[in-house]
Image 1: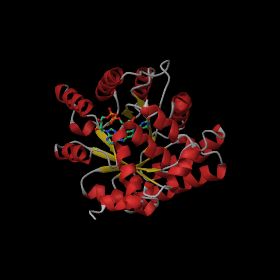
Image 2: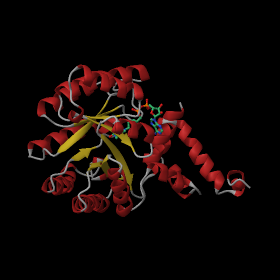
Image 3: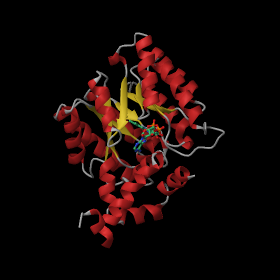
Length: 314
Ligand SMILES: Cc1cc2nc3c(=O)[nH]c(=O)nc-3n(C[C@H](O)[C@H](O)[C@H](O)COP(=O)(O)OP(=O)(O)OC[C@H]3O[C@@H](n4cnc5c(N)ncnc54)[C@H](O)[C@@H]3O)c2cc1C
């Protein structure tokens, strides 16, 4: 399956090096990534705020194996938090634990990430822990639970509708009063742990959405699927759940029309804005979600090749 192949490529260092050096690849990435620097991330957040959208900023990076790199990632988040606070932006941050040292050592990870949680808490800011592949689900939830019990209640998790276990995890989060982002799930997972058919994933998404809207704490419904969005709106309407009790979230560069439509209809919309040089695996997951996005890559590569005249109207 093309999706599985693209996800596999997202984990290949050879494909990463090839793609990152391919002509035009960087300009394709710019469709889904705000830029490579903090400045570019902040400028994008500012523009989205002006357009009425909230933002979550993600400093790209994952599967980090050196302590130095993991510390540098946390330091970058500290600077991002300071910038958001200084500019009074309507934004928070999302991070991946494997970027912070989850593959290195649990205590190192804890020491590294709680610096970010603490700085965010000082600024009354929320931090979202993105969810990665199923190899990390239990560890991420355990880590989240430990930090929550230590008083970092300004953090929340992501639960994936394709995971069979997510119903139990939603119950736990609802009992704690923790904020959950619900998404379908972006990795390739075996049938033992994850639903494989789109119909099953969608049905579980709707079931979990209902649990979160009715019993959860300010859930985030993260999807570009109009069916999921309409089901959420219908459930909220029929259960007198006010529009400010939850938010919709979408990825930067994806379905901007839908983002604006929801915002105009009075819903809170938060845009997930990634920035940084490590854009390759993120970009490949966006390709896997919608292989038609590959067209942008092919077009950009051709544009900068000797065949470029075909795209320049010459
Ligand atoms: C804010 C946010 C945060 C996320 N965080 C995580 C996370 O922490 N962990 C995780 O595993 N996954 C995460 N995801 C990704 C998510 O799991 C899905 O892979 C992704 O959102 C696609 O699923 P969908 O709900 O949009 O529905 P789909 O059924 O995949 O798509 C529905 C429609 O949306 C449009 N669409 C979807 N994706 C794209 C795209 N890339 N480009 C263009 N159009 C597209 C298409 O029109 C498609 O027909 C996140 C998604 C969002 C929006």
